[in-house]
Image (cartoon, rainbow, N blue to C red; front, side, top):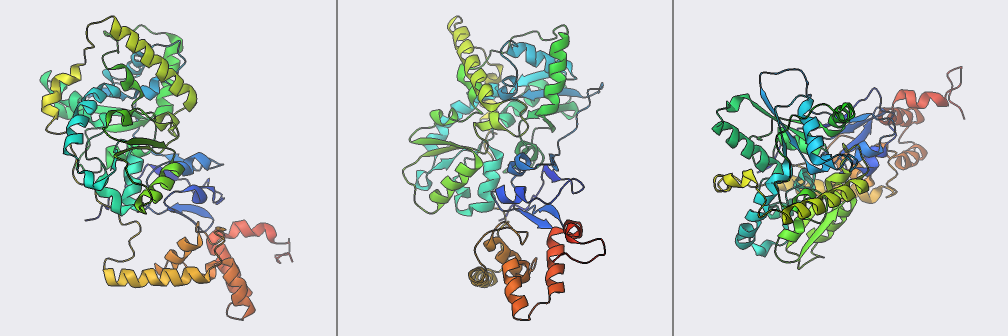
Length: 460
């Protein structure tokens, strides 16, 4: 079975795009091509990691989130706030002050996502006992961009993805269960996640291993940060009735690199940054790595602190979360126990914390018929041997191998390669006008106008 849900949050504004190809060069799944002077995304390959968003020099790449209006609404609206959002603010602001400010911008209730981590830690013991260690390592499912990456690029590893809901979804399930007991109509509850990345927007709209997400919508963290900053400056009267310290201290660091792996038995590694993840998974799939029991993987450097929608510096964010952990630890020492209301629902959620099997995506599928797919694979290898191997990107594809795939899929021709063009022109198999037309098709007519003289003739 293949996963063919290609919902995406990363979008390209072609009116702004200048076809510089920066995005094409950094895409880890080679999902971007330059066509008619603009970048285009292949939806079956995109994992919404946001690497293209980081490098776009003209901000033509944007993230499409679920718009939130602060205006009054008949719905009961809950803000799910990750601890990394609190880390965006200077330490002079307490977690309670920040979460209070989030409530004041238009929510009926706020809830910190990491309160669900205590439940996640509890089920890790059970999973570790039941896990099939014949397929090591088990790969954490916290980061949706990593899950999508494996679905697209590492089909043989999909069975090793941990089949449990992320703390975000556990928190949303708890809220829906608890609100139902307060006689709030479940259909009237809107749970919004304040997201540090694009991949979690997609996870809410098109979850992997689930039919429907308990999340109603996801909002760009930068937008909420601006609204909350204004509220903090105005220092409006608090509307919160409790302090937000009801979780184990290190839970606040779950989304940054290195915390999750500590709670899984055996030899565990934490890897962050998409380039590092790809390099490691390449080695793992080829059998060059062994003896690892668990992999904690984050697409962004420093984990969610480095998310593309985080307005603050990732290193300062990590430092602030570490400082907050110490404060919570000191607070816990003065109390006999830390009360986490979510754990009252642990028995109920034990029945729903798992997700279904994760299937590969067909981003690299050449044909449904295996025999034909193998024939096409041979054609790709043969075509690739004819191409120069420079991976210059002038053809509008990131690598010569990618161009060979596009040719076999009838999305390009061998004349797209500028080096092959020269050979074809020399052997009279391609006229200069035909070569020029091919270049225009890739890079756009306007791109080449600067090489024309006022009389319309091309400069020599």
